[in-house]
Structure formats: C-alpha cells, structure tokens
Image (tube, rainbow, N blue to C red; front, side):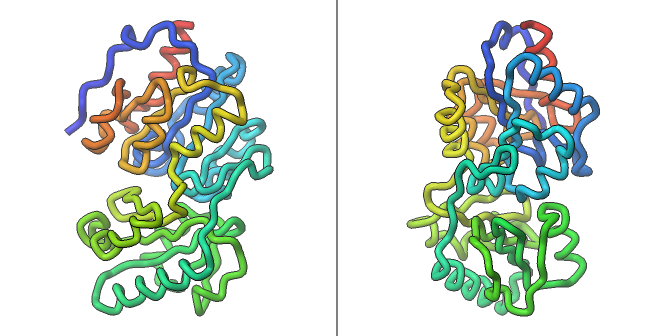
Length: 280
C-alpha cells in the first residue's frame, strides 16, 4: 500500500544545488525505462544550476548507457556507492580484497549446494563476472550489468571487485540474508531489492557517496535532495537536507524521510522536481 505524497506547498522555495536519485523502484518505471520527459528535465535542471546524480546498485556502464547523450558533467554513483565517476574519470572507488572475494564466493557455493537457488555476480570496474550461465539468471544479470563476462571459474577474474551481488530466485531478505549476517561485522551487507543482496567494503553505502560529492562539488547538505525506495537508500536519505521516500517505498525508508514523492509508476521524481523548478 502506498503512502500519501507530500503536498507541493510543503517544499516551496527550496535552494537546491544537487539531486540524487535511486533508479529501480524510484526513478525508473517497472519495465526499467526512464520516465517520459526525463531528458527535458535534465536540461532544465542543468540550466538552473542543479546537478542531477543517478545513485544505484547498477553497474556504471549500465547507468552511462541509460543516460546516453546526457551524461556530460553528471556524476554517476554506481554499485551502491562503491564507484563514483564523472565524465569518465573516477572520483572515488572502494574495492574488496581478493581474500574476501574468494572466501565469500566459496561460502555462496556452499549455500547453493544446500539447495538455495541463487546466482552470484562479481561486480568489477570493467565488467561483471558470473559463473552460472542459465538464461533465467543471465536475464537478470543483463538488466543491471550491461558489461558482463561468463567465466568457467568465477574466481578467474582479472579486475578490481567493487561488490558481490547475490540474486535469490525467491526472497533475498528471508532466504539468503540469514546466511550472511556474520559478514556485517566487517563489511556492508544490504538488501537492495526483493531478490538482491549486495556485499561491499565496510565503508560503502550511498550516504558515503553523497558526502564525497558534497565535498568535491562544494555543495552543503542543506542544498542537497535525494529520492529512494529501499533500505539501501537510507544512508543517502540521511545525508541530505531534503530526503524524499517514494510513495511505494519500503516502510524503513518512509520512516526516515521528511517528504514523500508519488510512486515511480506515477513519475514521482519528475513530478517533484518539476514542481520545484516551477516554484523557483
């Protein structure tokens, strides 16, 4: 059940210099496409001196392709904050040690051998590396990782690994997550969707990415806005002055947000930003 969106009159006269938006369940429609009018909105934001930042668990290459032709000057936060790029130049990255990757992949292989239906993605800077190659899994991989490579041994990768992503064919939070709780003592482990869990460097979350960009672009917290819908967005929302949960958002996200945007299917991000531009 969706929450009631905040009336536009409650966010009039905002001084905004940067807007960050999650993608799946937030900006994108359920079919994975950008909402109508997005590229016109980007031009209007740019004209108004507002930096728009996609902040997603998706791969950098996937996000760059999605915004093809409109990424000049646009920072991109990929892999849930583990990789931040602007105009093709890395601004920051946080990688996993080889030893941790090996140990975690071996753990996940054991979990799968006991009957848990999962697929594993090693998200590198250059590509995503998978071992499982059936179409049901690869369809999911291709959605989020346009640059991907199938290896006979997943641990034969030659890259820096930013994130380990697990796709659970059932429910990630109740299914696979309990097997990974112990990793939270020294790594970031987040549920990033109904079927996805992401494991990253312990410093990594979208909030760190927000603070990194605020510092590099000299934009204060009280001139920063963000939109999110799932628990992996909470730190991002806590790092901005104007946090918007989507009306279709997870209850934990709604609880930490001062404002509510219409759902992603109703073009909530575009609706809110268009109202702000019209008022200012």
